[in-house]
Length: 230
Length: 129
Image (cartoon, rainbow over all chains, first blue to last red):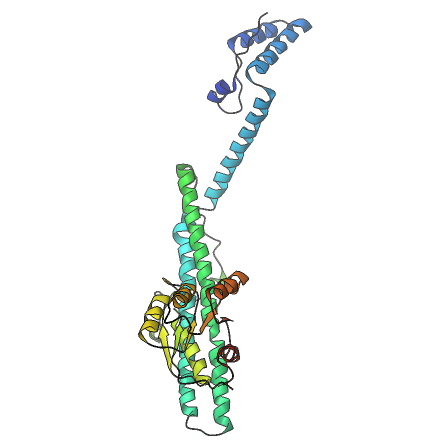
């Protein structure tokens, strides 16, 4: 019995990852062995040797290990794509990150505004203190100096928040690159909108935090709503 | 003892208006009232070329011209190179201080700072006042 399994990694690849397809000669040999109620040891040995000989000729043990590793890597990448899709990176890039950056910008704006108002008041106090004499005037001026010193926080925190915003924008751009790299596959996997977060119940449903200035209601609007209850 | 002219013009440079205001007020507490402001390195350089100043107090992190670039420009200008230059910045890494020193900074204050620190650095530059 002549066995020549012309099995190669290339041909196996063409049949799909992880599957080695025996040649017609090997298939015929196997069928001949199966057809016998009890194949002889020599016949079995010939079939096995034929397969092994073909493997050693066309596919080395190192090739097989490499092929196995590549297959495992492919499975890992596929799983990673599914996990990436599950976190809805596109939604994160389009909505979550810009919203977080806007919130941080609002923090900077609000603290800057408050700091300026504090300093306005301090300057008024200094002006008033100018009309006084003695230790009271000195005490007021010292207190104002301490307040001005404390206002340093706005500059430093503003710079820290700017760093965070830059980091968010970097993450955003990396997500964009990742989406471009994985392309349609991730888009297809994340075609369904992300599941909404569990809806808060009871008092927790009322904890929305401060609104962005553009959407926040002013006191006049609140008064109007309040008055509408009669 | 060296007598400091408390009426000498001082240029403060920072892109945060709030910070300019803080420094101006702290200088006022120290008795220095003649203070001009610039919001970036380029406009500061122009002011320095238009008017004689006794001291520059500058932030580092500004655009388009940083405080370090401003310092280098000042030190490279024959008419400006002797002006005392104090860097006031949140940049506190060793390499920042070294770079500023190598560029010719006169003193270096890390934010946040207080009036006492500002006074100490000015005393280090001008002597007691």
